[in-house]
Length: 313
Image 1 (cartoon, rainbow, N blue to C red):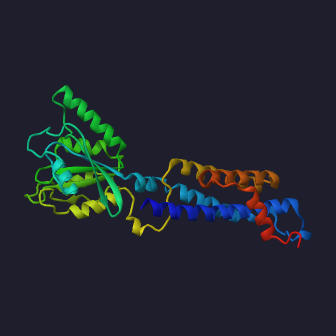
Image 2: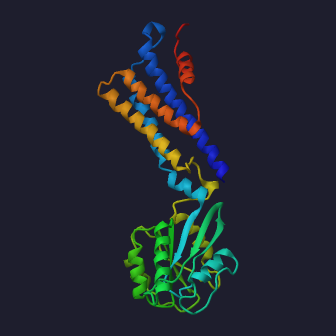
Protein backbone atom coordinates (compact mmCIF):
# COMPACT_ATOMS: atom_id res chain seq x y z
CA UNK A 1 0.00 0.00 0.00
CA UNK A 2 2.76 2.42 0.94
CA UNK A 3 4.62 1.55 -2.27
CA UNK A 4 1.54 2.49 -4.30
CA UNK A 5 1.41 5.83 -2.49
CA UNK A 6 5.05 6.51 -3.35
CA UNK A 7 4.51 5.70 -7.03
CA UNK A 8 1.53 8.01 -7.41
CA UNK A 9 3.24 10.79 -5.48
CA UNK A 10 6.44 10.59 -7.54
CA UNK A 11 4.52 10.91 -10.80
CA UNK A 12 2.42 13.81 -9.53
CA UNK A 13 5.38 15.79 -8.21
CA UNK A 14 7.34 15.21 -11.42
CA UNK A 15 4.40 16.57 -13.45
CA UNK A 16 4.21 19.69 -11.25
CA UNK A 17 7.98 20.13 -11.43
CA UNK A 18 7.86 19.97 -15.22
CA UNK A 19 5.18 22.68 -15.28
CA UNK A 20 7.29 24.97 -13.07
CA UNK A 21 10.36 24.39 -15.26
CA UNK A 22 8.27 25.42 -18.27
CA UNK A 23 7.20 28.60 -16.47
CA UNK A 24 10.74 29.48 -15.47
CA UNK A 25 12.09 28.69 -18.93
CA UNK A 26 9.50 31.01 -20.50
CA UNK A 27 10.30 33.92 -18.20
CA UNK A 28 14.07 33.53 -18.47
CA UNK A 29 13.84 33.24 -22.26
CA UNK A 30 11.78 36.45 -22.37
CA UNK A 31 14.45 38.16 -20.25
CA UNK A 32 17.51 36.95 -22.17
CA UNK A 33 16.30 36.68 -25.76
CA UNK A 34 14.30 38.73 -28.24
CA UNK A 35 11.55 38.08 -30.77
CA UNK A 36 14.28 37.54 -33.33
CA UNK A 37 15.23 34.43 -31.35
CA UNK A 38 11.70 33.08 -31.54
CA UNK A 39 10.61 34.30 -28.08
CA UNK A 40 7.23 36.05 -28.29
CA UNK A 41 5.89 35.45 -24.77
CA UNK A 42 5.85 38.10 -22.06
CA UNK A 43 6.26 37.16 -18.38
CA UNK A 44 2.75 38.35 -17.49
CA UNK A 45 1.13 36.03 -20.03
CA UNK A 46 1.86 33.04 -17.80
CA UNK A 47 -0.30 34.16 -14.87
CA UNK A 48 -3.09 31.60 -15.49
CA UNK A 49 -0.52 28.78 -15.69
CA UNK A 50 1.16 29.97 -12.50
CA UNK A 51 -2.21 29.92 -10.73
CA UNK A 52 -2.92 26.41 -11.99
CA UNK A 53 0.38 25.14 -10.56
CA UNK A 54 -0.30 26.90 -7.25
CA UNK A 55 -3.65 25.10 -7.09
CA UNK A 56 -1.97 21.75 -7.80
CA UNK A 57 0.62 22.30 -5.05
CA UNK A 58 -1.97 23.35 -2.48
CA UNK A 59 -4.27 20.45 -3.35
CA UNK A 60 -1.44 17.96 -2.93
CA UNK A 61 -0.28 19.53 0.36
CA UNK A 62 -3.83 19.23 1.70
CA UNK A 63 -3.67 15.42 1.39
CA UNK A 64 -1.14 15.17 4.23
CA UNK A 65 -3.61 14.07 6.90
CA UNK A 66 -4.98 11.25 4.77
CA UNK A 67 -1.54 10.21 3.59
CA UNK A 68 -0.22 10.07 7.14
CA UNK A 69 -3.14 7.84 8.08
CA UNK A 70 -2.39 5.44 5.21
CA UNK A 71 1.25 5.26 6.29
CA UNK A 72 0.90 5.15 10.07
CA UNK A 73 -2.62 3.80 10.45
CA UNK A 74 -5.82 5.22 11.88
CA UNK A 75 -5.55 5.78 15.61
CA UNK A 76 -8.90 4.68 17.07
CA UNK A 77 -9.58 5.01 20.79
CA UNK A 78 -12.59 3.13 22.17
CA UNK A 79 -14.21 5.22 24.90
CA UNK A 80 -17.26 4.96 27.10
CA UNK A 81 -18.41 4.51 30.65
CA UNK A 82 -17.76 1.19 32.42
CA UNK A 83 -19.65 -1.93 31.35
CA UNK A 84 -20.78 -0.74 27.91
CA UNK A 85 -18.75 -3.52 26.24
CA UNK A 86 -15.52 -1.81 25.19
CA UNK A 87 -13.32 -4.84 25.86
CA UNK A 88 -15.83 -7.16 24.18
CA UNK A 89 -15.77 -4.90 21.13
CA UNK A 90 -11.98 -4.90 21.02
CA UNK A 91 -11.97 -8.71 21.13
CA UNK A 92 -14.62 -8.86 18.38
CA UNK A 93 -12.71 -6.47 16.11
CA UNK A 94 -9.50 -8.44 16.63
CA UNK A 95 -11.18 -11.80 16.16
CA UNK A 96 -9.56 -13.09 19.35
CA UNK A 97 -9.78 -12.70 23.12
CA UNK A 98 -7.26 -10.01 23.98
CA UNK A 99 -9.03 -8.09 26.75
CA UNK A 100 -10.57 -9.49 29.93
CA UNK A 101 -14.36 -9.21 29.88
CA UNK A 102 -16.27 -9.08 33.19
CA UNK A 103 -19.31 -7.28 34.59
CA UNK A 104 -17.13 -5.64 37.26
CA UNK A 105 -16.72 -1.89 36.56
CA UNK A 106 -13.11 -0.75 36.31
CA UNK A 107 -11.70 -4.11 35.16
CA UNK A 108 -9.68 -2.38 32.43
CA UNK A 109 -7.09 -0.18 34.15
CA UNK A 110 -4.23 -0.18 31.62
CA UNK A 111 -4.47 0.55 27.91
CA UNK A 112 -4.66 -2.37 25.52
CA UNK A 113 -3.36 -1.55 22.03
CA UNK A 114 -3.66 -3.82 19.02
CA UNK A 115 -3.60 -3.44 15.22
CA UNK A 116 -5.98 -4.70 12.55
CA UNK A 117 -6.25 -4.21 8.79
CA UNK A 118 -9.37 -2.79 7.15
CA UNK A 119 -9.33 -2.81 3.35
CA UNK A 120 -5.57 -2.34 3.26
CA UNK A 121 -5.63 0.42 5.89
CA UNK A 122 -3.76 -0.23 9.16
CA UNK A 123 -5.87 0.59 12.20
CA UNK A 124 -4.44 1.00 15.71
CA UNK A 125 -7.09 0.18 18.31
CA UNK A 126 -6.84 1.29 21.92
CA UNK A 127 -9.15 -0.05 24.61
CA UNK A 128 -9.39 2.33 27.56
CA UNK A 129 -10.65 2.32 31.13
CA UNK A 130 -14.30 3.22 31.60
CA UNK A 131 -14.81 6.95 32.11
CA UNK A 132 -16.67 7.76 35.32
CA UNK A 133 -16.06 9.84 38.48
CA UNK A 134 -12.89 8.22 39.92
CA UNK A 135 -13.16 6.32 43.19
CA UNK A 136 -9.47 6.48 44.12
CA UNK A 137 -6.16 8.09 43.10
CA UNK A 138 -5.18 5.19 40.85
CA UNK A 139 -8.44 5.35 38.91
CA UNK A 140 -8.16 9.15 38.66
CA UNK A 141 -4.70 8.83 37.12
CA UNK A 142 -5.97 6.20 34.69
CA UNK A 143 -8.86 8.39 33.55
CA UNK A 144 -6.51 11.36 33.08
CA UNK A 145 -4.41 9.17 30.79
CA UNK A 146 -7.55 8.17 28.87
CA UNK A 147 -8.20 11.84 28.10
CA UNK A 148 -4.65 12.22 26.83
CA UNK A 149 -5.21 9.32 24.43
CA UNK A 150 -8.54 10.73 23.32
CA UNK A 151 -6.92 14.08 22.51
CA UNK A 152 -4.39 12.36 20.21
CA UNK A 153 -6.85 9.99 18.48
CA UNK A 154 -7.73 10.23 14.78
CA UNK A 155 -11.15 8.79 15.59
CA UNK A 156 -12.94 8.32 18.90
CA UNK A 157 -15.26 5.32 18.88
CA UNK A 158 -17.78 6.20 21.58
CA UNK A 159 -19.54 3.08 22.80
CA UNK A 160 -22.95 3.30 24.45
CA UNK A 161 -25.20 0.68 26.03
CA UNK A 162 -28.35 0.28 23.97
CA UNK A 163 -30.07 -1.70 26.72
CA UNK A 164 -30.00 1.33 29.04
CA UNK A 165 -31.03 4.96 28.83
CA UNK A 166 -28.36 7.61 28.35
CA UNK A 167 -26.67 8.36 31.67
CA UNK A 168 -25.13 11.57 32.95
CA UNK A 169 -21.68 10.04 32.34
CA UNK A 170 -22.65 9.28 28.71
CA UNK A 171 -23.84 12.83 28.15
CA UNK A 172 -20.80 14.46 29.74
CA UNK A 173 -18.45 12.29 27.69
CA UNK A 174 -20.20 13.14 24.42
CA UNK A 175 -20.19 16.86 25.17
CA UNK A 176 -16.47 16.85 25.98
CA UNK A 177 -15.70 15.02 22.73
CA UNK A 178 -17.73 17.24 20.39
CA UNK A 179 -14.61 18.66 18.71
CA UNK A 180 -13.16 15.22 17.88
CA UNK A 181 -14.00 13.00 14.87
CA UNK A 182 -16.64 10.87 16.60
CA UNK A 183 -17.97 7.47 15.66
CA UNK A 184 -20.93 6.65 17.94
CA UNK A 185 -21.85 2.99 18.31
CA UNK A 186 -24.73 1.58 20.35
CA UNK A 187 -23.81 -1.84 21.73
CA UNK A 188 -25.95 -4.74 22.98
CA UNK A 189 -28.38 -4.73 20.06
CA UNK A 190 -29.15 -8.34 21.05
CA UNK A 191 -30.97 -7.06 24.16
CA UNK A 192 -34.23 -5.08 24.46
CA UNK A 193 -33.40 -1.49 23.50
CA UNK A 194 -33.95 1.44 25.88
CA UNK A 195 -31.58 4.05 24.46
CA UNK A 196 -33.47 6.74 22.56
CA UNK A 197 -31.61 7.59 19.35
CA UNK A 198 -33.32 10.97 19.07
CA UNK A 199 -31.95 12.05 22.44
CA UNK A 200 -28.52 10.81 21.40
CA UNK A 201 -28.61 12.78 18.13
CA UNK A 202 -29.40 15.97 20.06
CA UNK A 203 -26.07 15.65 21.89
CA UNK A 204 -23.90 14.57 18.96
CA UNK A 205 -22.29 17.19 16.70
CA UNK A 206 -23.87 17.58 13.26
CA UNK A 207 -20.74 16.16 11.64
CA UNK A 208 -21.03 12.85 13.50
CA UNK A 209 -22.41 9.90 11.50
CA UNK A 210 -25.64 8.19 12.47
CA UNK A 211 -25.06 5.87 15.46
CA UNK A 212 -24.52 2.24 14.51
CA UNK A 213 -26.36 -0.51 16.35
CA UNK A 214 -24.01 -3.41 17.05
CA UNK A 215 -23.64 -6.50 19.18
CA UNK A 216 -20.07 -7.04 20.33
CA UNK A 217 -21.22 -10.33 21.85
CA UNK A 218 -22.62 -11.84 18.63
CA UNK A 219 -20.89 -9.78 15.92
CA UNK A 220 -23.94 -8.01 14.49
CA UNK A 221 -23.02 -4.76 12.73
CA UNK A 222 -19.26 -5.23 13.11
CA UNK A 223 -18.47 -5.13 9.37
CA UNK A 224 -20.42 -1.89 9.01
CA UNK A 225 -18.53 -0.53 12.01
CA UNK A 226 -15.18 -1.35 10.39
CA UNK A 227 -16.14 0.57 7.26
CA UNK A 228 -17.37 3.47 9.37
CA UNK A 229 -13.97 3.65 11.08
CA UNK A 230 -12.36 4.39 7.71
CA UNK A 231 -15.15 6.76 6.66
CA UNK A 232 -14.89 8.77 9.87
CA UNK A 233 -11.14 9.20 9.38
CA UNK A 234 -11.83 10.50 5.83
CA UNK A 235 -10.12 7.61 4.09
CA UNK A 236 -11.13 5.00 1.54
CA UNK A 237 -9.55 1.64 0.72
CA UNK A 238 -6.33 2.11 -1.26
CA UNK A 239 -7.66 0.24 -4.27
CA UNK A 240 -10.36 2.94 -4.58
CA UNK A 241 -7.99 5.89 -4.07
CA UNK A 242 -7.35 7.77 -7.34
CA UNK A 243 -5.12 10.64 -6.27
CA UNK A 244 -1.57 10.90 -4.97
CA UNK A 245 -1.12 11.54 -1.28
CA UNK A 246 1.75 12.87 0.80
CA UNK A 247 2.51 11.01 4.01
CA UNK A 248 5.45 12.97 5.48
CA UNK A 249 5.36 16.38 7.14
CA UNK A 250 8.55 17.49 5.36
CA UNK A 251 6.85 16.88 2.01
CA UNK A 252 3.90 19.02 3.10
CA UNK A 253 6.24 21.82 4.18
CA UNK A 254 8.17 21.64 0.88
CA UNK A 255 4.97 21.81 -1.19
CA UNK A 256 3.70 24.77 0.82
CA UNK A 257 7.06 26.52 0.38
CA UNK A 258 6.89 25.94 -3.39
CA UNK A 259 3.34 27.33 -3.52
CA UNK A 260 4.41 30.40 -1.53
CA UNK A 261 7.22 31.09 -4.01
CA UNK A 262 4.81 30.93 -6.94
CA UNK A 263 2.29 33.12 -5.12
CA UNK A 264 4.97 35.78 -4.67
CA UNK A 265 5.88 35.48 -8.36
CA UNK A 266 2.21 35.72 -9.40
CA UNK A 267 1.48 38.74 -7.22
CA UNK A 268 4.74 40.39 -8.25
CA UNK A 269 4.07 40.03 -11.97
CA UNK A 270 0.57 41.43 -11.47
CA UNK A 271 2.05 44.42 -9.67
CA UNK A 272 4.82 45.14 -12.16
CA UNK A 273 7.66 43.26 -10.46
CA UNK A 274 10.71 43.01 -12.75
CA UNK A 275 10.67 39.57 -14.41
CA UNK A 276 14.19 38.90 -13.09
CA UNK A 277 12.83 38.98 -9.52
CA UNK A 278 9.79 36.89 -10.44
CA UNK A 279 12.15 34.32 -11.94
CA UNK A 280 14.01 34.15 -8.62
CA UNK A 281 10.75 33.35 -6.80
CA UNK A 282 9.90 30.61 -9.30
CA UNK A 283 13.39 29.16 -8.94
CA UNK A 284 12.85 29.08 -5.16
CA UNK A 285 9.68 27.08 -5.79
CA UNK A 286 11.69 24.59 -7.85
CA UNK A 287 14.32 24.39 -5.13
CA UNK A 288 11.58 23.60 -2.61
CA UNK A 289 10.41 20.68 -4.74
CA UNK A 290 14.04 19.60 -4.91
CA UNK A 291 13.82 18.96 -1.17
CA UNK A 292 11.45 16.12 -2.08
CA UNK A 293 12.97 14.91 -5.36
CA UNK A 294 16.64 15.60 -4.63
CA UNK A 295 17.01 17.07 -8.12
CA UNK A 296 18.61 20.39 -9.12
CA UNK A 297 17.16 22.70 -11.76
CA UNK A 298 19.70 24.77 -13.71
CA UNK A 299 20.46 22.33 -16.53
CA UNK A 300 16.79 21.31 -16.79
CA UNK A 301 15.72 24.93 -17.26
CA UNK A 302 18.37 25.60 -19.94
CA UNK A 303 17.39 22.44 -21.77
CA UNK A 304 13.72 23.46 -21.68
CA UNK A 305 14.52 26.94 -23.05
CA UNK A 306 16.26 25.48 -26.09
CA UNK A 307 13.56 22.82 -26.48
CA UNK A 308 10.60 25.22 -26.38
CA UNK A 309 12.04 28.16 -28.33
CA UNK A 310 13.82 28.45 -31.68
CA UNK A 311 16.94 29.95 -30.16
CA UNK A 312 20.03 29.55 -32.33
CA UNK A 313 18.07 27.77 -35.07
